[in-house]
Amino acid sequence: MFLLAPGRAAGRGGCGASIGIRTLWRVRLVIARCQVDYVGRLTAHLPMAQRLLLIKADGSVSVHSDDRAYKPLNWMSPPCWLIEDTGVWTVQNKAGEKLVITIEEVLHDSKHELGPEPGLVKDGVEAHLQELLAEHVTTLGEGWSLVRREYPTAIGPVDLLCRDAEGRSVAVEVKRRGEIDGVEQLTRYLELLNRDPLLAPVSGVFAAQQIKPQARTLAEDRGIRCVVLDYDALRGIEPDEYRLF
Image (cartoon, rainbow, N blue to C red):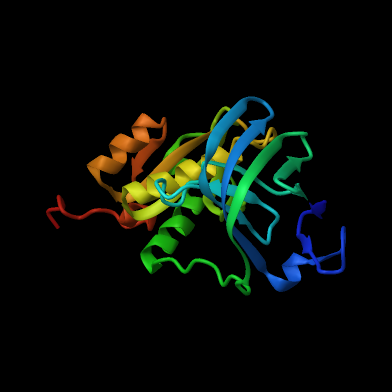
């Protein structure tokens, strides 16, 4: 049996031996034929098939196929623990939710050290838009307040976490050009944020200078509000196109 506590990985010194995975920044990739069962607030079943199992340095475990780009089929966010027995992995979190992975055959198993993450470097205008919107968050609605910029999640920070006039949580993703990828990114953040009982329910706002029609359609279909930002207005520059002098 192998126990992976948050931020720890197995060592070679026998059962239960472990070393700090955060020290090594080690990620484990396993390609296996497996079935996956989630037991928690609901139940979900993935029948036997070939999949990628990803164990990250933050302790998270996710299950991927090759037909969903970056979105996992199922996952467990940290803090969680992986108990590895012969043919069965059990991932459990503090709430008692479990991800049970039954492995029929392992095709690949490797560990990799990625090194420290320098973080996302945003386009200058996009970064400034985020900063300006944080300063003028009432642009999104009367009575709104900012909780935090770059609010952390297990897959990266959401640009702004706000409260609306009724005190409800709202995650805001800010882009210069609003495209489908940005909507997908915000959708992933919302899935994670809504697992936090202190924040849920969390709604989403997709804010950009320009939003493509396909992105707007996808966002609205997922209940995400779209807001077109006026960069000059946020900077306090009044439009002069209709002035006579």
